[in-house]
Image 1 (cartoon, rainbow, N blue to C red):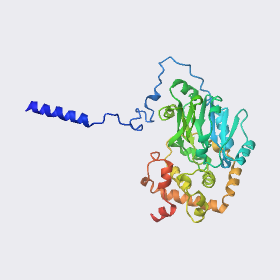
Image 2 (image 1 turned 30 degrees about the horizontal axis):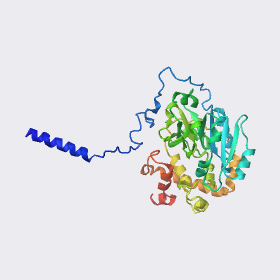
Image 3 (image 1 turned 120 degrees about the horizontal axis):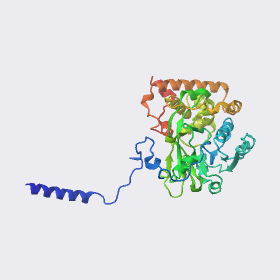
Image 4 (image 1 turned 90 degrees about the horizontal axis):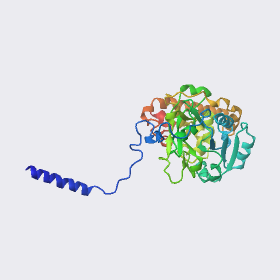
Length: 376
């Protein structure tokens, strides 16, 4: 009987081996990617340099020394542009590449102030494309020799050091195998400048800083192409080292209104852009402002620095907004926004936990104000 049992077990084992596929199955990179540090870093956060060997790490006095910025500009950025440039210049950035898509924006850059010693390079892109598609066609080869590192960033994103004494050059030196560093978003939507006191929270994505010699193209708003390497595995998340990107998703309530009317992105956040003013007049809230309400209601559990937006140009902000809607319409929209926040707060647990969901997904999930009112 025992011999028969062993024979049956051997036959079953052979059948199982025959039924299993011979080729290895593709591995989902999101499964098992986290080596236990909570930031999805795998083993990349362990330097492959032997202790006490390798190049001497540069001084960390300016955390972005050797970094050039690659960003975009349009007229809606006027109120915030000077403080954006000044912030990065103080962190050691000496060169900024700015992509524009029309002659008006290009001319505007010539009259807005630029910090002394900061070089500004303007690149004119195809006006027929959306901003996200246009800068994918930018030739990066001429930029590669101008600075050791290049950062992809928007004008509402501000690098902050949560830990003093760590620089980008130092991290690239410690991790020579990394093609690009990845800074996580710390979200801090703002309605008024002192909202930074409410604290921030981790966002669902971030932005890269690449070794300039390795960049071949812009893959998306959140990544460079680095030759044939998969950017997911050639990138090193550096939130653990205290470098974060504070994302002021709104720099004021008016900023969110301006983006609602004037941005040129073609996505779920802007699906009702052409109808925004009729919606407000009819007592409804556009999608982008619903998203702002959702973000404002998230708990701020991370300390955020004093807002660098204190020096924004309020006069320019109001001038731009008055071209879109009147004082009374702005006041009406603010009241609609407050009503939406109040109603959404009572039902926040019915919606996905941020940042386990992207804002494009949330744009499709958040209901109109009328639906929230009817559900009371």
